[in-house]
Length: 204
Image (cartoon, rainbow, N blue to C red; front, side):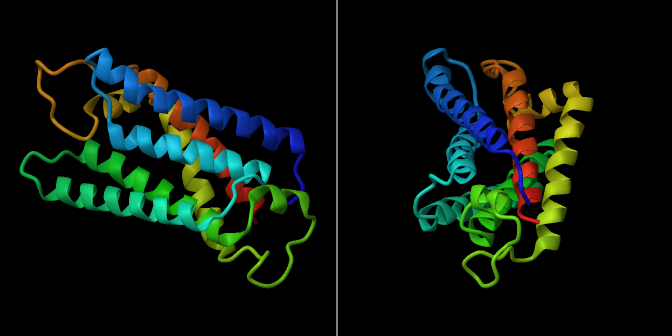
């Protein structure tokens, strides 16, 4: 699927900005004595850098990134299972973990499916064979629909999404430090999901 180069480059800049912001949250939250979900921020940082690399064909070797996102998917899957089994587990927290599990899986798919999204966007027809073909296009479509649908849901139900982030996957209690800029995290999630949806559509 052919797409304008400026769109991919623009989205890459946005992804790098989000990655830098999420990385800074890890430092600011500590010194400002505010809460943040470290696994989410780490995940968004890695996703931002990796997606920017795929959009511009400057990702480098994909194997290390595949390992990173398989590890992330495992972490979120175990966290979701543990939260479901916990006495004080919440469906809100479990939903957050499951969504990040799916986004981690989508990253693994994109890294394995084609060499780069930028190459797919610049090529009218996909080459045959494992080096350039899009494997399991139906999966790409389903993941893309999920990404866009989740972005729409967050936009439509902003207060619910903010409460989701405020909970951060655990019961902090009334006396816990406030969450650092939960609204900004929601904006980052929307931008990353829309970008990932675009990248998945490009692979079709």
